[in-house]
Length: 512
Image (cartoon, rainbow, N blue to C red; front, side):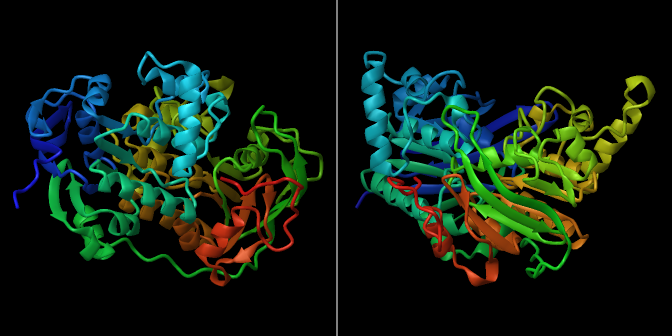
């Protein structure tokens, strides 16, 4: 039997930027119906390679073949015309437009907006990725925006689908549904390039894995017969270090949320209902849940972005901070890492040193003058201590890879020596090496006596990091449970609001 013509072939692809070779003589082959993983640390060259395939970046050298024919893909529009679709890790959506209007921009101009709206709803139901096509994008959470990107790509009926971290905001049950869909697409002949840092997912889903390090291909293997440890060694040169065991909380209460009920200020937001939450010194508490169930509203209330919480509902180290702003809360020891790195965690065009000013004021002298020497020294120290790959303290935040920017932001907040650290999606879209480093830093902070609250949609991460877990669904919090006493499957059930004694409003349905 003759070997099928590869869907995609890359030969000796090279892409250089000033001071760095992002892709160095990379060759890759993807067969029809193959689910092909691309593994590598942040900065390994994966994203650049995917953007070359999708026409968003032009290579300096090399040849690309699609269905056996040499092609020069000069734009994403040309890629989509060929049958190549991509779901980016960092979304490409217009905030002021609705979901349907965003999707409409990339589809056949002969379709009406109503036809696109109906197609979105049908496709979303088919794949278990329900989204409201009429909602404006600015009202969506990060997880909901990712669902929009996936549905938009699937509507183009691709021959090659590139997925960059597609499951980071899905429940275990939703991941399984997505895998069923991807396997069905592969059975129908669609080729899939799958980028993920979740090694167990790659081993469960993919039939081939290309590993990259430092812009070069370091190995190609069958992940179904390759251990997680071996995949980690191929990717980062070693296995991630094991974290210390979980703790039974015994320290003083540093965060005490007492019956917080708060209507959402967003038209499509989620109201908070009778939230009770405690975090003690020297423990890590996690909040699990499907994106869009009240996590953004709770985080805004805790961080001080929203100061509408009723008096007496949010306490920090014995002080009522319900109506305190972000600056006052930071002075009392609360520091916060938001889920959106660029735009909220860091100003994209500013250098790393200047980005310290977002949450650190110790480099501001008399009269408001900035002590740039102090700022640069602080930034250099964080870069060195947290292994951030950056050109220096003046490197623009947007020039860093996602994992390196996340390490810098986490380092910035940890070095402020908080009493309480709140972290949203600490390793979203971050590779194994960087994720292990960030988790190690969070655990070290716990060991030093800090209270840590982690909000994440990655159950594996929560089970690895946390001592106790809550689950959030429809604006309510479950009772807390020690991690050692609950399974991932049970937490997945609770994500629908079906925990013991959960109040069930008449007509409520399971969260998507």
